[in-house]
Length: 242
Image 1 (tube, rainbow, N blue to C red):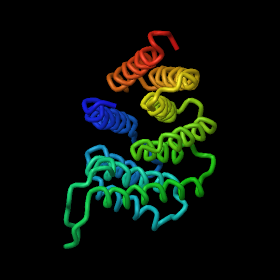
Image 2: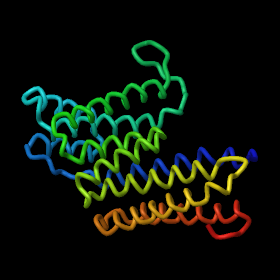
Image 3: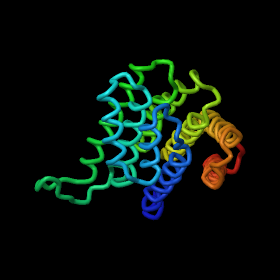
């Protein structure tokens, strides 16, 4: 891979994560049953993550089996980490509690906290799709695309009309395909697998758009990325259509 392409890859990765997080905010709805959940959700939408976290914690102290509060707390941990620290590949030095550390370490701890809380939500309500969607979103931002796809698949088994799950399935399918396309030397035997992944991504994005029209420009960007992936596949195969 040339130096130019090596430099461009992280930029593409960050652009994909940015679009993914924007869509995550679009999906954030005030669907909690209790008034405190609605207020906490409103705080999250405004970016007041710490206040939302404390509110969800208070809800769980009152009722440790409140699935809405548990899901909300996992989401709050995730959004705070993703938006304030970014994916944990960033290694700029920070000072926390007087000790030198990095955003990567801070993010890793916070992401682990979000993952643990989402898994606790599954224990509280195994039939719910939401914690699987949350895990899929977290794993995607962490670059664990196969895990993200697996969680989206679990969510869709529970709620086939879940637009968030469709979105995560599409984004993770595209990312897995893109990772295959980066392999050098290119193996033509991967063509069918990449085509299937890109077809799945396109179908999931199309379904997500029909379920949640508010996604708008975010989905347009993803569909453009799928087109670019298909063009790259054609070039790798010497101009032959995959």
